[in-house]
Image 1 (cartoon, rainbow, N blue to C red):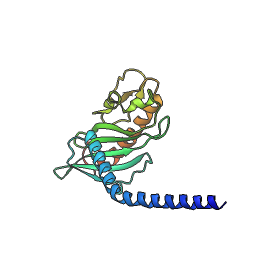
Image 2 (tube, rainbow, N blue to C red):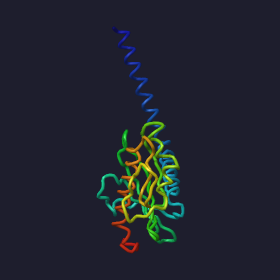
Image 3 (cartoon, rainbow, N blue to C red):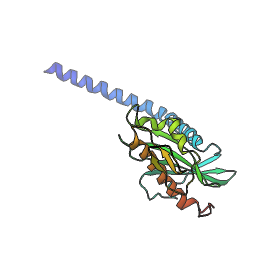
Image 4 (tube, rainbow, N blue to C red):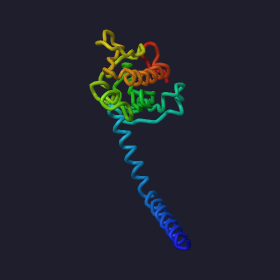
Length: 196
């Protein structure tokens, strides 16, 4: 019994020292990790809005009504508001799909979308992150909700679903539509002029 008590105390001491060492190292590595995450986020922003010079998180100012919208970032070029990048999180077949959707203000349209995270079925729903699907959103107008169709699109607001992944395709489209509605309500008037 005495031996097991000694062993238990020894293991507790080793665990405490290991915990303190990890905490000590964490304080030095966390700023580097945060910096890398910020750089990756900015790279992703530039993928959906390539001509962005300055990007400002204005989620608090434009408080989204829709719970699918996680972030609202405004894009500036030469101190002029030229676009908006949304982070949206619609629910797909296997959980949330996190994506960016960029919108241009001068000629109101979707610039591009980028899937950041997803847990959809491998080989089916996870195809939403491939360029053959995300490119279907590029340069789409904002006047109407986008619709998912199972046959070749006949109208500009239609998006061809991925075969056997209609739920995932619909989730991405729903996320883009949530951002599109917010963009249209807060950043564009009927003539396409800036509201805010």
